[in-house]
Every structure is written in structure tokens, then in C-alpha cells.
Image 1: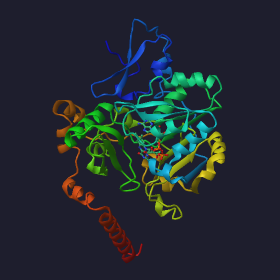
Image 2: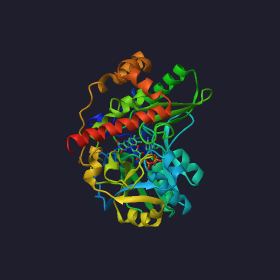
Image 3: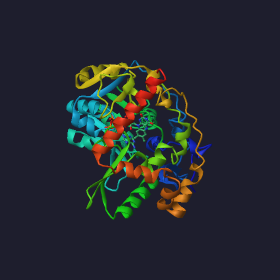
Image 4: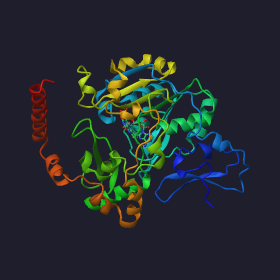
Length: 406
Ligand SMILES: Cc1cc2nc3c(=O)[nH]c(=O)nc-3n(C[C@H](O)[C@H](O)[C@H](O)COP(=O)(O)OP(=O)(O)OC[C@H]3O[C@@H](n4cnc5c(N)ncnc54)[C@H](O)[C@@H]3O)c2cc1C
């Protein structure tokens, strides 16, 4: 019988695996539900009722949260690294430092079947796979247990992940380690790998290709923003800007998130991680000295440990002080202490529709903009024409602002 131990409500579980990893009797395994999200399953013949799993569940654990000591608009100086990062390259800034010191970096990469898995890197060439956001639920596997072993042996570790994964790690470790640095990001939720698989399958059939690499945030065609790109076996790279990618359309609107994401307890200005990063959407109006073409990050240094490491690497970044108010303008979750998003109506049926009717029908009916055809024409224009259009549009907006005295 499947039993969700800690669940007055299944929606309270964030799927981090702390309970599974902390169980002394190994009586918990994580299994995928119908939607494709992981939940704990207790083998009652092994369970001794110690309640360790419930005590260390991050959704109920009490954390010592910290307000940022400093907040920056920040961008890595190395252009190539910046272009391959989702925003300002903050992950590589810290990760490079750790591998150079002989430390271990923990982060998310695709495995061979495009599942997002949390894994390890010890050399610079392994960090490349961790770069870039994978907008799907990732699996921490047994990384908490392995990291504890590494820390107990005194090695430096940088652990990066979603806020709930960092909370899970801290609740699992039960103590602070001087040689551990944690980095989270402002996260607006994760869909299941089942939904992502279905979208890949849909794209492969649509284009008659096999996808060999997939990037949610590619900057080569349109610069910083939302542009999906996938490398194929026979048609080169295919680019889909923002809403033209049906999966991304649903993701940005929060149509298919894990239920726990809609009431995430890890939002807000007080953070569990040492470092918090995010896209600095809308920041260009406050920081004219930074070039925004390839993006810029919000960087929050929340602990003295983070401050001290940043001192050693700050020469590698363009960096300006920025206020939380400015940062929160387009990243509302930064100010909300505990997010209680209204669950979109479509969330209740979207997974049912997926396994009853398939992704193709979802894409046509629910995950598409009403201006799909018009936008497809716009984005398939020659690049130079598209850029001229953008320039004219920005002058038009400036002129309008000027005429109404702003
Ligand atoms: C699911 C998700 C939701 C997000 N929501 C927002 C948001 O609402 N607002 C916002 O400003 N930013 C959000 N971000 C963060 C943003 O997309 C960038 O990842 C962040 O700004 C870091 O960019 P970078 O250039 O420093 O690093 P990059 O080089 O892009 O580094 C990526 C980092 O993210 C980690 N990562 C990538 N995918 C996953 C995953 N699925 N699970 C765990 N860790 C992962 C990698 O391990 C690495 O540490 C989100 C990221 C993810 C993965």
C-alpha cells in the first residue's frame, strides 16, 4: 500500500528525498505518481516509527533564515561563459572557484534520456553541463548522503539547486559545515519530467528528428530572454522564442507545477542558502553601465561565508549595488514571505488531459498563444529585419513616454 507519511496532504511534499535519505531502516523509497512527480512510499514492514523522516521534512523544519547582507546587479566578465549561462553567469563564477580549489560542485544536468538530475563535478569541463536552467523537476538522488560523507572528510562543497532542495539538504545535514556553500535561485515552480518528456516526444515527431541536446535559455539568436533551442540529429539547431515553445508557454504561466510549488515556504527575502541568484528582469533601467544584451543576474550574498568567497572572485564580474525593491519589481516572490499562489484552473486537468489525449492536443488547445501564427511569422523574419523592428519599437516607446512627460 502506498502511504504518504507526512501528508496531511500530498501537496505538502516537495520531493527532495530528505526522508528517504535520512531513514535508518531504509524503509522509504521515492516513487513517481501518475503525473510524474516523486513522492515517498513507506514499507511498513521495515518502518520502526522513529519519526525521523517527519522531523526532518524541510516543509516543516525550522530554519535559521538570513536576510541578504548585500544585493548586486552582477554579470560575469567572460563573454563566452556569459553567453552560455541563463542570466549573468553567477553559477559558473562560484563553481569555477570551487573546482580550482579542489572542491566538489553539485548541480543539475541532463542525463542521457533528458531527465534533470542533480550530480557532481570536479573539473571545469564537467561544469558546462550544469550551466543553463532546466525548467523541470530535478532528482537529487543520493546526493545528500554522498555530500555528507564528503563534508565529513573535510572537502569543500558548493551545492546548487532549487530553494526546496537546499532546504532539504540543510534539514538532512542537521548542522552547519564551514566547508559547505549553498546557492539557490528565485524559483517559480517545477513541472514534472513526464510533461517534459511528452513535449520532447511531440517536437521529435513534429520535426522528424531526434533531439540530442536541449537548452531552455539559448542566447545565440535573440540574446538574453526566453528562447528554447534544441540540437537535432539531422536538421541542425531549431530555435523557438518564448511562447512559441508550448512547454515553455505553460511553464511561465505556472500551468503544470508540482502542487507544493503553489504554496512554497521558501520564497521571500529571508533565505536558507548562502547565495541566491536570479534573472534581473527589468534591471537595465537602474544600471545603465552594464551591457544587457546577454543578461545580468540578481546576486544576493546572505551570509559572511558568501561575502568572504565573493571577495576572492569579484574581479571576474561587473557588479553594481542594487536595491531589493528594484529587484522585486519583476520578481515578486522575492518579497513574499510565503507564497500562496492561486492554482490556475487548468492545473487541475492538465495532466489528465496529457495522458488521456496526448501533448499534441494540449499544445494546440491549452499551451498556445492566440497570436501563435502571427508571432511565428515575426520570429522567422531575417535577423537584421527583426532587430530593425525592435529598434523602431523601442524608439516608439521612448517617444510615447516623452510625449506624456515621463
Ligand atoms: C525551475 C527553475 C525556475 C526558475 N524560476 C525563476 C524565476 O521565477 N525568476 C528568476 O529570476 N529566475 C528563475 N530561475 C533561475 C534562472 O533561470 C537562472 O537559473 C539563474 O538566474 C541562474 O543563472 P546563471 O546565469 O547564474 O547560471 P546558469 O549557468 O544558468 O546555472 C544554472 C544553475 O541552475 C541549476 N539548475 C538548473 N536547472 C535546475 C533544476 N531543474 N533543478 C535544480 N537546479 C537547477 C544548475 O545546477 C546551476 O546551478 C529558475 C530556475 C529554474 C531551474
